[in-house]
Length: 83
Image (cartoon, rainbow, N blue to C red; front, side):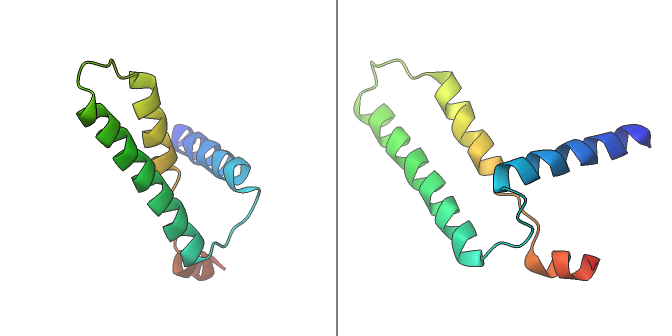
């Protein structure tokens, strides 16, 4: 049980560092960030398709995945229910 609490605390700290301590987010901001990540991923896919001989850097693709994972923010309804 202590391990679970530690993991949750790590995630909370990481989220607060990434968001600057904000607890409530506008839906439009979340959607805007999601679109930017999708556009970046699409642009990378197009460049990889147009030049198949070029070697793609696997580190860059994992970085975009980590950006996408940051979008797993709690919904506003969930935050209000906690109060």
